[in-house]
Image (cartoon, rainbow, N blue to C red; front, side, top):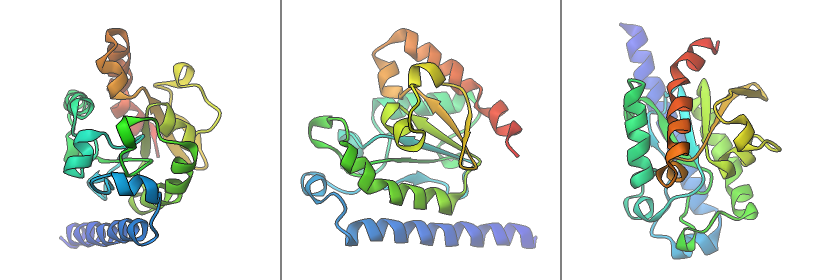
Length: 198
């Protein structure tokens, strides 16, 4: 009985720490120019106790409006793939490298990714997931420098003690049927990869 109670307390303390990271981004005016034109900060969503953290690149239009990552078409596809492996959004934690929507959905700039990276690393430190899944090239480049996503997608990589799984971005798969199947095939391997991580 006590163990369950410990878990609840753990989730609460993790949530408090995550809220503090979010407050730090706001108080330190990270990427002021981006913040000015965005509706709000899109920090992250899901369980602070998750075994898996998904990391995208930056919020899009829907995310900017709702303040939650991956709620547009790509998010819907992500939810479908989670269902395929018997999970849902409550089982995972999801965030982006850059926490404000870039104007006109342009790619995040290197200096924007750099500015947000310490906060992303702090999020990961609090959650301590078994597996970090990068979605798309920008996310992978920031955490696993020097790799080509076309060559390493779907292959778990251990880097600085953390296991990463680079995947194509769900948005790319929406416009490319072949990539959609590749992403589904890679995604289906997640439970087996999780089992192997000790």
